[in-house]
Image 1: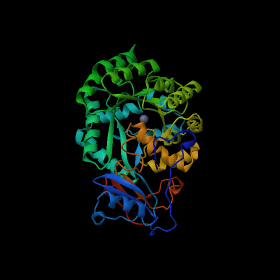
Image 2: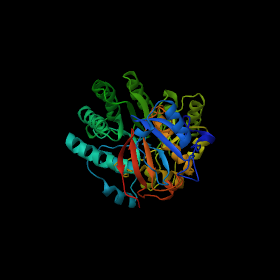
Image 3: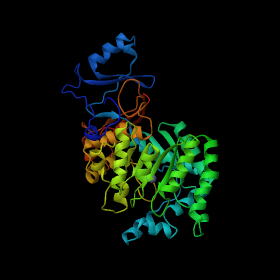
Image 4: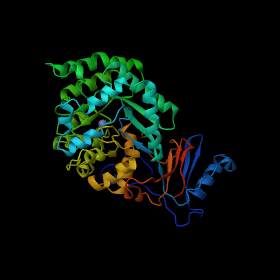
Length: 425
Ligand SMILES: [Zn+2]
């Protein structure tokens, strides 16, 4: 897969290398050295290139894909990795007809996770994070974004960002921490006049400077949604965050058109996420940003829509037709998407959003890398990039979304090292 972000008619251009003779001189190989990709291409060409560069061929350990497809390590650009407690009761409430905002306004939803997370220790959160990070790696994921947002006070938000950062240092999964202080209005600000606005002020004046001083968060995110934070409040939080060097991204137009896509384009966010109900003006604004060479990635989260039992899906084809690069994430979280499987999200992207398997593959590799502003480092198999690869149990990448929920990642390589090696099946 060569060359940057995929959008428009090129969203599904995965630049595949194939051969009929996997042991022959034309068999595609990836060569890496000290964690970086040196060369990709037919074996003969790569070996010649390495010898010409003075690399000792005999010192390269060889790993045979044994007929399995090989892709870049998958990148999950939207997770809420760290939380405490579970919310299986809401599944039953939804079956009885309750909506997301019904459950939230009754004190459930995010607020129950906030109470459990505030009570959790750093060790609790580390253990939880390790358990799910391991599962992500086992599904072929080598980099994720992880949001805070279940603390909603400075102390707990810093703890969440710190745990995400430490889990990333521990590896093998690389973790990009995002501060999501404006995820919901916490109980202590609810039910009082002007409570939402008072919380927005405390996010900007108290949380943000503390998070910035802590120095671990790379992005700032806001839940921009009718009934949560308005586009105006979201703009104020994200602009203030930018002033502290935290790059903007946002939860936009998930449940109703709320001006989120327009805001993302206006402030040059790295990504606008969910986008199940963007306005036509919002899609047009994101198309214009993409055309100008500074795209806002549309990060779509189809598992969430399914888990919330909604039949209205993000207009993925409209984004692709408008030339907006599309990424796919799990939205891993305890309320609305309790899955750590990015390949499963690829299945939903194909079934419910109408992406082709190749478009879905670009959406979880190079475009997901761009959504994290890491497209020069990861997301494709090109010389100079990190040697993050997956060897799949299936012979073609088309089969990855074709087997929903299956355990397909056989061998996962992070910076040149095998970090997950499952059995043949
Ligand atoms: Zn989210």
